[in-house]
Length: 125
Image 1 (cartoon, rainbow, N blue to C red):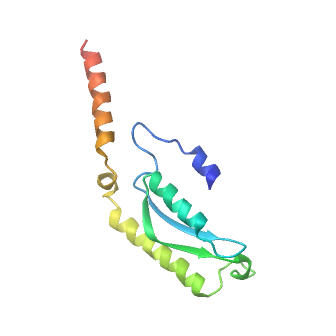
Image 2 (spheres, one colour):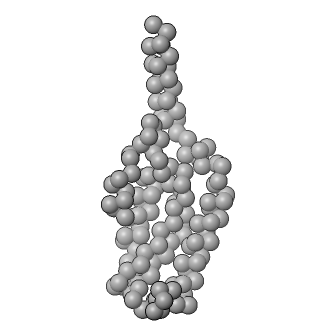
Image 3 (cartoon, rainbow, N blue to C red):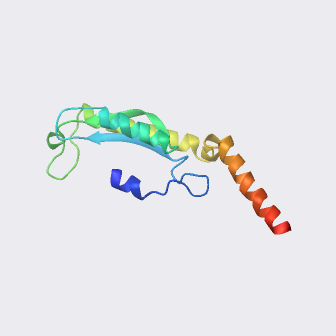
């Protein structure tokens, strides 16, 4: 995940390309269950101005949770992953069309106006 995040531009103008996108975090690990990585990814998602859903999941000992075909076996972990995905869909549908409003910041609008004013005043000269 870190390598992919490194390739995302920090901003396009005053806008982060990730802002307003809905984020769900699910961790699959080979060892015991730990929410440290999940919690750090949630913080990172919020820093990237993403709408991070409240629900999350962690699947420990992943080697025990999948069958030979690669499908997750029925379990409480499976149910939890489905719960997270349902919530992701709900939040995505609820915020569709409203993400620009929800992520609009005064400082970004002000910066855009200053750039526009500079451009217009430069052309007028």
